[in-house]
Image (cartoon, rainbow, N blue to C red; front, side):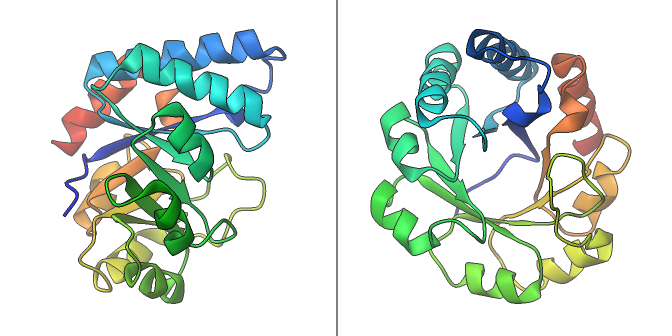
Amino acid sequence: MFSIPKLYAILDLSCFPELTTEVARTTKLLEIATELAASGVTLMQYRAKSASSREMLSQARELRRVLGRHVRLIMNDRADLCIAAGFDGVHVGQDDLSPEAVRGIIGADRLLGVSTHNAEQLREAAATSADYLAIGPVFSTVTKENPDPVIGVEGVRAARLLTTKPLVAIGGITRENCAEVIAAGADSVAVISDLLREPKKSAEEFERVLR
């Protein structure tokens, strides 16, 4: 079974709306990723919902080049770009390709994660070949335009009872609340916003809390 680190960093291009050129977005992305890697982060997901396929592939290849093999890189949604960029896995949501369709593309050796938002979705995902399951949003979040209903810490606790696969909690997770999420049964916390300001320092503080 995949051993997932307690901190799962998500690099979301939508967090930088003020950056209007691809060069600026790529520079910022690599800056944050490099700082996170320097702090010891070993699992990162690249998410760029509104970018073109060309920009996504270019940035993904740059992430792979800069981070080398010290960091496992997960592509959000796009199994094709995962292969093309040499990423380590794919993460899909409820409206994307089915987990088994993605598995057919990426093969048995790459990682596959699936987002779920309630008990029924989690049960279904647990029956697939997914290597880990995400559950959330645990708390309110600003990084999704139309977020699913908040499940709270109790939702994490309920999800833990439904699967033995690694469980990633996501949605509004910060240094202040991450410990209670892990205590509720999550194996890992996926973090976006609370890593953006001073990424290296923020990640180190997360690691201290989660130790």
